[in-house]
Length: 200
Length: 222
Image (cartoon, rainbow over all chains, first blue to last red; front, side, top):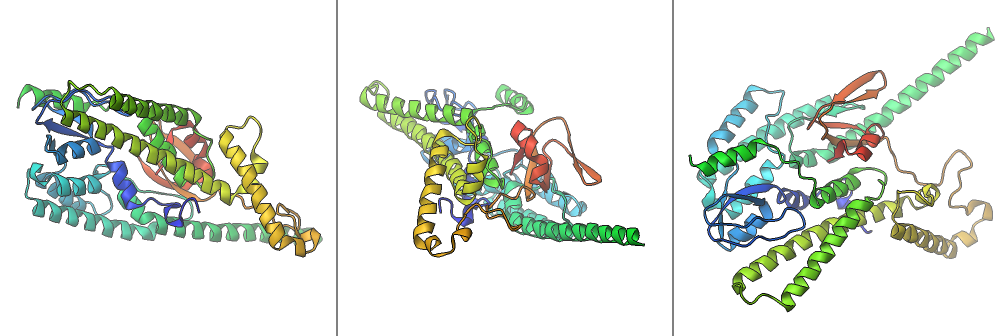
């Protein structure tokens, strides 16, 4: 009741977006601004055309007021993402290494700071879509490997994990309870066998 | 490439180890959301966060009252907006954290009443009060609705006889997604097998196995 069931055990995409907004980005201020004492990371005094690192949500506020340009992260360009896409194709059993919040940050920047990106946004969108799809296919293939004890999922980002989570946990918990019943019934069988041995 | 770019790259090469209120709150919130059982109340994190929030709110009130008329109004407004946004963001995290805890307390009321000891760090003082009041109300409701009409031997809410416990307990064998955040590898033993958790690796394991590492902060739930 305090927490709707949709929020239990999984995160909402909006929440992951919220978490992604805490990542820092580099901005290029257009105006100078005094230092702001924030609870988390204080914002240093901004000077025009001098790069500073601020949390993404601050950058977005400044951007919406036309006070800064956002320097796109070094992975958000066509060349880099294309290369990653090829890497994904080359290594069918492994995820390439992308930032923890790549989809969310890419989406936010494509929506809110399109003019700051170095490549045309439609091309970026399409390569991101390709990348997302190939990773999705891979993770779906990987579902075959699910077992009752443990798996490792290196290289996945939070949003992708969140997509898989309900299914993976459901299956693993079911497998676990099946596994538990088989082991306990085996033990019972052994006990029975011992008893019958003693009898004779 | 000018000097700024070079400095930039230099800054990027070193990984900043910022352990601030924000990150602590996020970790506390996510851990709580993803773990099947209640984690010890993050007293220090919560106290510092709440103090910081109220200080910041006081600062806002003060600056509205004695606002420096010297600075340009638009900049002042922007400043205020950023500060207000941050307060809202932190409040959201705090709210989410507390709500998640309350939902678990509601679910496992009797179990946590039994678990709770005077000096335990599991519940905060407010939560202790809440859980007792909640249990009281719930028992009263059940009694009035139907329990008074059933035979007295069947009315116990915390009945454990008969091979079936009436107390709902959290399932610590549930699987969880974890991420290792410490530089030294952690080895977990599962039956006859062992797995090693490497830094930044993502694993799905049973909650019971990583519980101690979560409390140490070496592993976070995701």
